[in-house]
Amino acid sequence: MEDFARYLIIGGIVLIVVGGGFLLAARLGLPLGHLPGDIHVEWEGGSFYLPVVTSVTVSVILTLVLNLIVRLLRK
Image 1 (tube, helix red, strand yellow):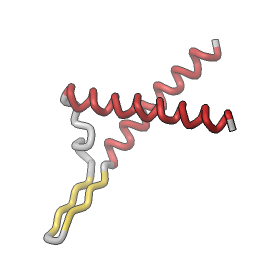
Image 2 (cartoon, rainbow, N blue to C red; image 1 turned 135 degrees about the vertical axis):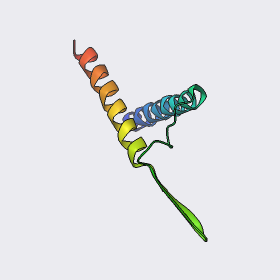
Image 3 (cartoon, one colour; image 1 turned 60 degrees about the vertical axis):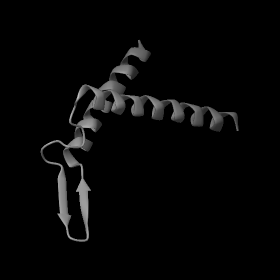
Image 4 (cartoon, helix red, strand yellow; image 1 turned 180 degrees about the vertical axis):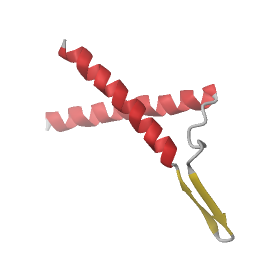
């Protein structure tokens, strides 16, 4: 049960850091969510938004950061 509690705490910390990163990106004026290649379709009854390029960009950045952290911890 202690391991589960640790994972929940770590998960919460990760969510806070990611949320802070998005908040910082918004304050710096980075256009996350409005990049070229993001799909946005509007019609009379509603709209549809699929942030394809934003998702790929965030994924690449997180992959690089996590790989860097893992390499630094192994040394």
